[in-house]
Image 1 (spheres, rainbow, N blue to C red):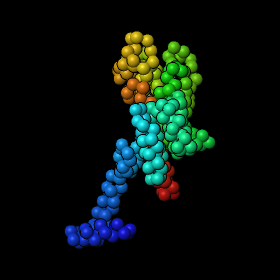
Image 2 (tube, rainbow, N blue to C red):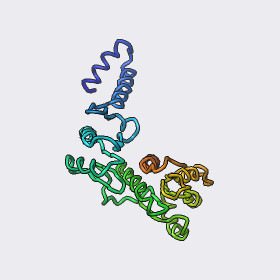
Image 3 (tube, rainbow, N blue to C red):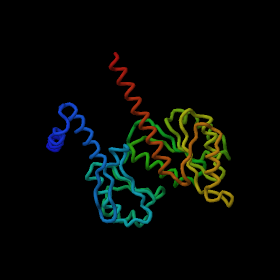
Image 4 (cartoon, rainbow, N blue to C red):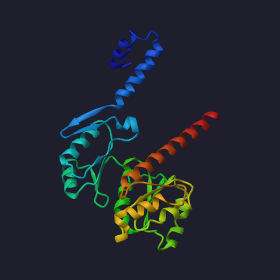
Length: 271
């Protein structure tokens, strides 16, 4: 036991006589304390317990925030051994943050800042495919990709395979069928998720974009199309929600990888 564990055990001794029960209680309390850790910075309370509770650290929504605040949050997370991600970051914000923390990477298309992300030399097979209907969907798709890299989930981009040219998608189907999750980013009528859903056995996360002419209604048409999709394996996140689509896909892929590792261990143990 650490000194803090011994102090907790001493306090609990007045209420619980059995030593094993006290040890269990100490373990539970320590987990609770770890999951509620915060760090105060000027203008925010950094949730350092998020990773313990939810699997991944807190993410900074950058829009409207002073760049100094993003720097402070990143430094607090780094001191706690956590990877950092900020979304919806302007070029001016990024310039300041990168000057203060040179190791930060800025993706101007995705408008993201990342610190401690998946190496480009990672040789693992991709677990998630981020698919775009058109090249105009690139900013949202890049946000999803950057989120997955921050989560240490290998991913591949399959771009510009919308339904206006269906032959472009067909040649990608063998690769798509190897994925744990597919993130489909599409605007206009957003027909692509339905088509994708009919080709793969994994979940398809639809991300509607605000791309399109007047009746697209800033992405509402795409959103409603995805919500009423005929394919049973398609679910939908908010308009232009590349981060959310990438994050949910990352959680799913991480859970699948953990389950695969557990099965492998069981097989080794049984032998």
